[in-house]
Length: 153
Image (cartoon, rainbow, N blue to C red; front, side):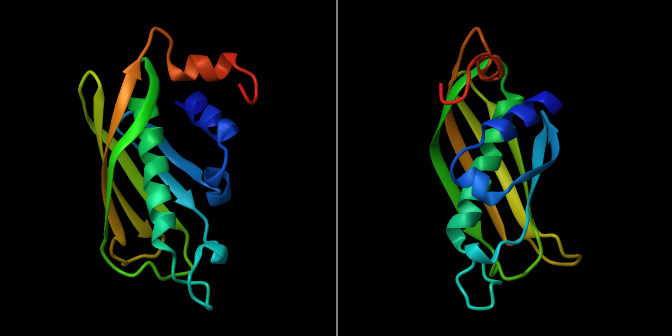
């Protein structure tokens, strides 16, 4: 599990790197990530109200990692459906925590659920999400491929 998390961090590109996600837990039954507060992701002058798109990207990324850990011989995956329920305003200067799990697998589809909250005691969840991914399984796992390919391949 530690090597999978390490590879995921090493290979991150684009928005994931900007989110500065830190893996706090990575197990086959779920992942927990931390996103440090970043006022650049906020839509108000005080730098406290997170843009909803950031929460969506955060959940989608966490779902991908959860699949990566839960699905044997995962070759590729693509998001089929991603739904987010915004439960309360995402307004705080605290870090954001997300938990995601792959709770069901079929031969070609996996199902995820997740939740998001601020790292502040007593605060309610700010969002919940669910997703389905189309997957392809292969003889070699995605981890094996990542370990054998060089950067940009």
